[in-house]
Structures are given as C-alpha cells and as structure tokens.
Length: 341
Ligand SMILES: O=C(O)CCC(=O)C(=O)O
Ligand SMILES: [Fe+2]
Image 1 (tube, helix red, strand yellow):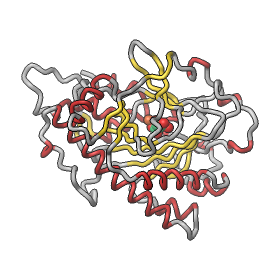
Image 2 (tube, rainbow, N blue to C red; image 1 turned 60 degrees about the vertical axis):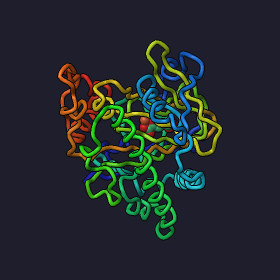
Image 3 (tube, rainbow, N blue to C red; image 1 turned 90 degrees about the vertical axis):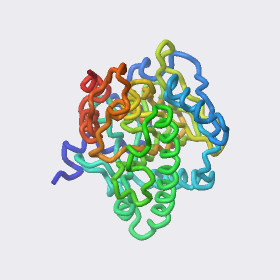
C-alpha cells in the first residue's frame, strides 16, 4: 500500500500554503491562464418559484450551461453551516488534514483537485471530497468531535439531491425523456447507487494572484453541479467571448448551477456542459460543489436512445457513467472526442 511519503502522493498532497511567502515556481501559470478576456458576464438569474422557471432554466442551459438560482428552498442557515464547517476543516494544521489524505486510487478525503494528476503545474487549491457518508474521513480529522460535521454534511447532501432531481426533472421534460426511464430518481436511501459527491474547495490567500491558478479549466463529470461560493473567482468560457468572471449574487441563499458532461450527452449536445476555471485572490475563498451523477452502471446516451426521433442523429455513443468517468480521469477535455460519433 502506498504511504504519503511515496511518489504516488506527489500530486495529491497540497502545499502547506501557510508556510510560503511567494508563489513557488511549480505553481506558476501563464498570465493568459488567469486573466479573463472580458469583463464579468451576467449569467441568467432564475427564481425557482417563478412560474416561468422551467422555460428560463431550459433556455439558460441551451445558451450558457450555467445560471444563478434563487428561491430553491435550501435553508440559508444550512448553507452557512456547511461553509463554516468547510472553514473549520481547512483551518486545521496541515499535519492533521493529512491524516485524511485521499489515496492515489481513491476519491474521498483531503487533497489536491482530482484533475491535478493531469497537469504538471500545481494549482493553488486544497479540497476535501465526500462520497456518501463523511464519517470515516471525519473521524480521522477529529478523533471525537466529528458528529456535528457529519450531521450538517448529511443534511446538506439530502437537500442538494432533492434540488438536483427537481432541476433534472425540468430538463428531462424539456428533452421529452419520460422520467420513468430514470429509475434512480426519488430514492431517499440511494439504494440505486447514484454516484453523488460533495467537494469542499479552499483557495488560500495568494501572494501573487496573477501567476497562480485555483482550478484549471474543466467541465464537470456530472449531470448538474450545485455550487455555493460567496466570493468571486469562478470564470466561464463562452464561445465568441472567451473567459469571463462570474460574479456571485449578493443574496445569501443564491446558488450557481452548472451543467456537466452527462447532461450534454443526454441532450445530444443541445445543453452546454460549461468549461470553467477558478482564479485566486489575496484573500481566502471557499466553495462547496455538489455533483449529481447517475449510478456508475447507468448507460448515458443521447435522449437515452429510444427517445430520438427518426431524423435525429446521435452525436455521441452510449457510455456508462463508470466508463466515461475513467475516460475523463485520463483524457480530461478530450474525453468527448472519444465518444463522439
Ligand atoms: O470553486 C468554484 O467556484 C468552482 C469549483 C469547481 O469547479 C469544482 O469543484 O469542480
Ligand atoms: Fe467544476
């Protein structure tokens, strides 16, 4: 078994950001990797209580692949609690965080971003990934005092799952896919095995933000990602515009919703899986990303194949969630070209 001193952990153990006064060479990116090409874009702001929300969400998914969401019913207090738990976790001394380091072949625990393995330059980021229950990892971090963390994470995951299903129902309807073909919806115990993940992200204060990058460009390996972040840093790429900053809304309950690759495949390319990256600041930034994905053995294909009309040509071949996730872990943005017809 690998131990944290092995070479295998080189891309997994984050820097002890408290210990550096300047950006180390191995963390230096090009200015074009960081600076946006245009001023902040105004992505759509949608209130889920609005009777027009389904139409607005469908349009936003066709033109942007990302939008701000209000009126979703997740209690503001729960959102604040999750952020404060994230802060508590990342504030721990590095030696304590390393007790829950994720293993080179695993996903859950403390470490660099999963996409770090595909880049030789390091990102100014530390993360903590939770798959299902947080208890095993939390016990490693806080020997006794872990229950509060786990309860908040559990509650948040449950509410995020229900919200993600609500949004996906709207998109399935827009695509004319009968929801009965999606038998892993409405399963409170998740016995059908949706591969859900909660990723806590920390971008420590950076002494030279124009040379460092928080998260390299990527699309999410999800159907939909629900993101909460109070401060700016997220940038999205839009054809014809380039990279633009997404400004968070001032509302304490606002979430940012972005579509992932599985929705692009399902919609036969009609909905956008938005390319995004994160830049850093002289101040600390946190974000919490909830990734909603089908079960690993679920076959994703354009309109689940049987709903394609005779004139519709499938742009992608059918792939299981597991097969696509493996392709993505190896090839990142080139994964699409490997499943394109
Ligand atoms: O921190 C953010 O704003 C985005 C995080 C993100 O893209 C991710 O976790 O996949
Ligand atoms: Fe992302």
